[in-house]
Image (cartoon, rainbow, N blue to C red):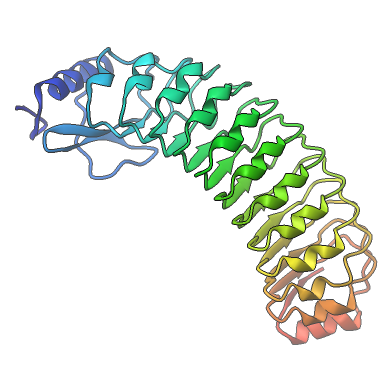
Length: 330
């Protein structure tokens, strides 16, 4: 064993972290936890298990990363990588890989070789394409592709059967592959700030989905299958071109937040009052002239925003809501 920063390391791990320190120009300190903005390493029983190299202007790594037998976490956030170093793809026990805020232009086809990955963060790069081999990361639970230039997702995204969170906000997507319906464990699907014009019917297969974010897209209609998302709690549809909400929305019995502002709505479903767990209803900037009578049955409603709608402020329905303790924003 060799001593580095007061910690015993195997010769292989010691040699690598020394080489890395020379490239960076500073010793790498030991840390207890790895966060996005961390700089340091964690070791256990002489083996480096986690490396965080936040903000070191790196564009390459010294050879030998794949020799770190127990490395399971690698954070390269805020560096200058244009390509993923090939050595990363040979780290056999890697589970967490964070490469956000870099200059990545492509993901290699060999990405599927790091098949123990559970957390892959590629946010804020210059990616316009995801290879089909992404579907080989079947243990992945979180995939963050926010703030890239993606035009589409490959159908193989449906192979990620353990995925719980999929984030593809601030891209250029026009559609979502129907294979997304195979992601039965998905709980969070964030697709805001794209150019999506419609949703596949298969979205209704996401039985465990709790959060569906679709703000700032080009949606005009919602498929009736959206009403099958019985565990949905947070639905954000603001800043689209939606004119009709499906009548079956009353099936979303666990919904607590519904954001519909900045659409083309003139009326709401008559059975909206069956959303008994709804706490927040945002209707800002539509063309709604009146609220359905059933809305007074929303006993859990804490806030309703009706600004920039031609709704009568003296409406008896609003008076009942106010009496029930609901905050009304005109």
